Length: 374
Image 1 (cartoon, rainbow, N blue to C red):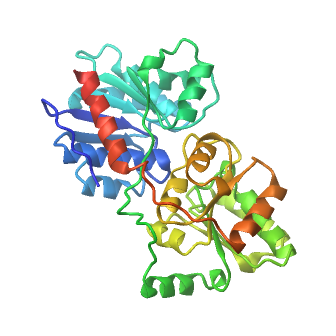
Image 2 (image 1 turned 120 degrees about the horizontal axis):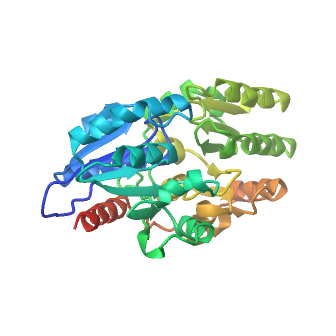
Image 3 (image 1 turned 30 degrees about the vertical axis):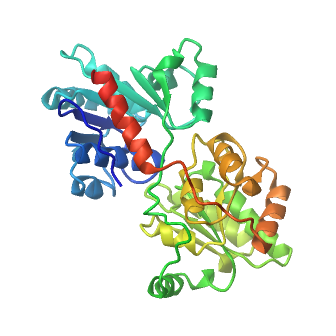
């Protein structure tokens, strides 16, 4: 579902992001790019590349490959190339979605005439300081939740609140339809691929291969449920990624140490997350640090699947509004096990979502673009 926002002229918008592998910021980049194309604008993304580039280009956007997000001094060598490409593209708006690409964009735009408008999105609750402050230098600063807005305004007193706009991420209800159940063919293929996930309630924790996503917590949860005689299975969805091999092996060692090899599966990112959520008894959100939003919470609840998560940050904000039964105090493993056992026995009903639609997010971002160029 793409938003179409009328404007008086065709815009050229460049989005800057480190790479296009997976993650909430990456998905938002594609969603805004899709809306720009649908509205007749020119959409370009500059990044190192990744598995989502093919989709980006198939949906009508352009991609420029530059490694502008690697945390290395070598990244500065890309600055002349970035400046050259921006001068060639002559964008109306440069939209930065990560700190180092934002710095690179900020430096590249210096002295450029006419200077494009600079917009930023703060996707994460980054450590306050000069390095993070670049994401607050945009003419408009998009915060992906009220939690995010409160956070930046509390840590950066010089930031004008009028420049900060809350535009929550959204999901397409048609892509995550209420009550969806995958067909028999998909279920047969899925459980043939992962036979150890069959025969017991499935808990799914979606998240890239980083310690912050709570993979250790999920493994310990399954081990404790087993110790209490409660059968369950765990899928760590999206944890296997390039460059994360050492972390994945660390998780496998913990799984072996807890004796739950037969109950846990690790997988790379997949394109059938809707169906995986739909066959899951619980979807987990156990990030160690507060998250700025929590898209997976909205996706799962849109499908009418219960969510169990730590009640802090954007996840806590969403659960408080949409599914209070799934809230657990952050880091409270005992309460996590108890609540999981309760929800596995009987989960409270889930109402159909009325907010957090993808089209709302797309329309709000394009309206903001039109506002800054006006």
